[in-house]
Length: 553
Image 1: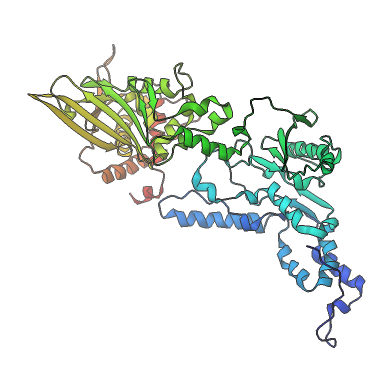
Image 2: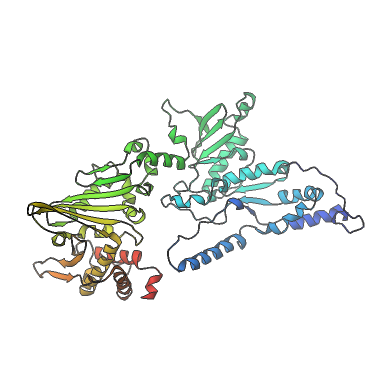
């Protein structure tokens, strides 16, 4: 905005006026008001939304939010790195045009402006659409600095020093990482000093493009090819120059000169899109079915289109089990033909299907989040189909779940996962059919009671290294735990602990779990090698019994 320099006059000439003071005194006042020794923090306050603590359904939520708000206020309003108190003096610029014209030079010319962010909470967790409402693109420092410089208009000439905090950019691994970094508005503005690696690399790129003009961009001004954007991709290693009739790419590799690069005839048009948009497109293609079935009998996955996985490694990494839409159900299915079975085959086949070490795996990228999906996805069912040749019932079925206990121990108390047991067997002249569905969380909390009983009866097993000290853990076809046992050996007979909590309701089981968690907790020296029994017990304790309810039982 152009502000003409005009001499104002008071509404009442008889009243004392600031403008009647000598110019030298007014200038001293401007300097005192608008000059700061420390860098002045600039961030897009209108677009800023601090990511609050993860919501938990208990009474500690208000206390947690209050602590977060206090820390946020301290971070923004009482920090020693940046100056935040300009809001108390900037209204003076609105007195009249003459004051603005006289003071603007002191404000913009006597200060170092630092574009950063007061609070930074992003990390490398899987992308969560619920977080998308926070930090829209206009908040990112590279976008806001361009907007701010453009809005200065004629006052741009007063600027002496502007710094961009490259450390406030999301790292490339961050789930909110910005796909492109626009640098067109920074074309003529660069800082000579740098004290961060990313800042130094960005500095070299800006100098090469704007000062040295290694890409010879100025020639486009005479060819009618207007440049409307210059972007750096989030790695800061490649970028592009675009316009109405112009699309070119350049490389900015470290230790190499900035130069144009040409793509071959097979261009990655999808790869040019922002990472977030690529991920959304790939998810729509990959998870187009209403149900995904992991069939452990045929060792295959149905309802999932793998075509996107063959395009590039970057696109494969953009899609995991965490990307599955919540309205898509997930079924893990296994058939069993005997009345007594163990979970070893179940665990081995599941691992071969989705583990990176499985030679026949076409979906190895899923393994990193396979266990997480049991805690986060609202519609996942494990189906065990018992097709038995003799008459029986689910109550008489026996399943040893020892091999899947390590997986179960990583499932949180918020999981909505279910286990569905289906029995089909002959019964006289007809076919007997029986079905039972149980909550996986309730099974885990019952398992915690049984493991606690094992620990109390044989405490020495907790300190054994390796996985051999996990007992066999049996439940029937109704999903009810029966006992845990160690088989007989050459020097000892079979040891067994019956499950003694079968008459309790789910609420009573949970309350008893809190008491056992507090009564039997032991701190082990980090240098002590502990085995799978202790690891599974302590993992369940941490995921299911660390909330505020422990103080009420």
